[in-house]
Image: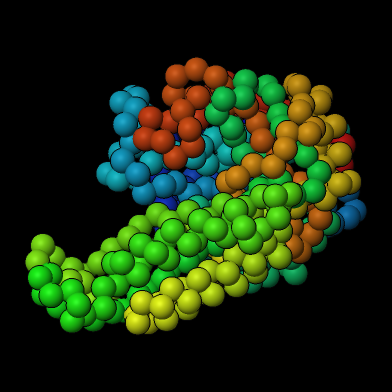
Length: 375
């Protein structure tokens, strides 16, 4: 299977995207290729995850290299010949490319008679919702496989192919989610004095939430609080009785997450009390902050340097990544790899016009192989 056409393989995954844990075709395609190459493949870890192990030498302990498999619930707008055949589902984040590069690395290392280490290739489900890593961990990932360090990679539009970027320490943000429910007293729009208007209360809450970043968090501590939806049950001539406000928070440290939640609850309680309404807050964490281990980061930087240019002080990035959950259990590092600077390859991740760059497959495979051989 070393002669597998990786571009064709990637485009096949792209044409048949699947979301969440529903990755039956995707996982079967990947597992079948790796089994045919002689790797020991364990399926259905955390529902649909895969671990393929290449053991060379006496030790069963080795590093783990991880790729994600899931697509997004987005309608593709590229009109490519290999565009998605599943309506409303699209590989708009490049996980088809991530899986292909890791498959390519597994095949190359399996075909290398001089390779004498153990590597565990992790193919993860449901990265986009932030639950796939936990599912694999809860299903015994780190007890069933002897993993000493774990590494991840993500493509990045806007960076040239062959270039890499990372940094030691905090790298990707946490993602918290909030759901605020405000209840008032609805009535006729002509007699607002007889009711308690939750829209006015909700608007005041939205305004006050902006003070969390500007007044409750130190300037040195980055965070974002974004209201992304505001819904009511009112109508043209009916005062609403209920308001729902939802949104998203980002930062890089656990104490920032706790501070945001503390201030949000205080704001909702205070504004509702002043307006005669009632309110409650549901606050949860979808993604933990991703913190790169210093030693593992140096290993990633050295391997990437054998392939192309590396920015080893890229700075923190505001998006979140489920790979962070693995780093709660083992040291490791996460790196970004260029996807190109023009056309669909430079479109933002999650944009309907985005496409993974097939020219990035070769440097991605080379990076994984260099890391496996050197670590």
